Image (cartoon, rainbow, N blue to C red; front, side, top):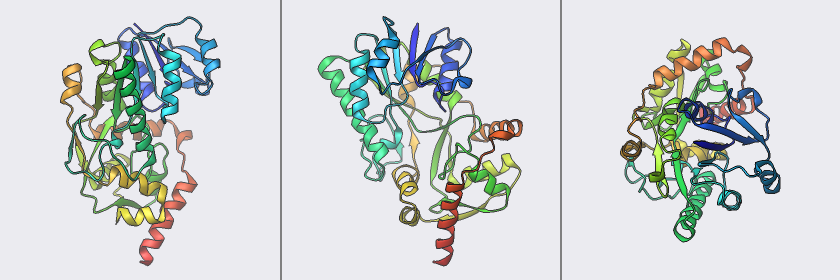
Length: 329
């Protein structure tokens, strides 16, 4: 089987690349070539900018694929371009959507693939929902062979996922320095975090799977933890007890609108996912990486990669600003 990943070196897509290779799939990456150090051995790289369709056409030549996965689609115009580029080149097109598009505020804490998409808080989620609508119509009207996948909060080795980011070391650095960290609300709402290695197993089973064409899936862990426990687990991996300050989500949104939109549109609610559908299609999908194990892996990774210990000064200032205003109130 031959699969094309548009992107392929990101947080989720890298482990999906590795899992596909383990299955004997021939993997191609199409990207601008800016992260060559993250490309696994054996991957064939096509250097082109997906936002430049003529450049992509030339780079692809006469190549065809069993599946094309676009990891970097954020609005319907991107979908339109992909349909023009790949409708005659692939038997399956997978769009990476987002579980954050599910209805907010929630009316039922257990989400399945039939839950309505509606997010008035976060533009990112609304655009993903619009992409889905465009794709579903293309499947119904023109038989474009789409599959939609909705990751939720998915993290890899080297990540410490929090409401204030996870890709850098800003929040862990605050914990290690004994500085307060913000947890929205009362810290007791439940949240699902999924390791990329588990996600990749479920995702891999959809590649080239004709039964998955025309279908929608979310792929998540079954472990749900409170936000307080998430922060305590990160602290244990780092060897510290975090100083948690609870601040209402609405207050955060007032003083940091961008962060507030993400929290109110996604992380402020208890959300548990019904994974029965992905298990029906991919029986091998059984998440095994607990959040505690994932955080130990991240702590060990940083211990061996000191140059990657990066604190985002802007993010740190925004956290300090919210804390300062909250204390004054």
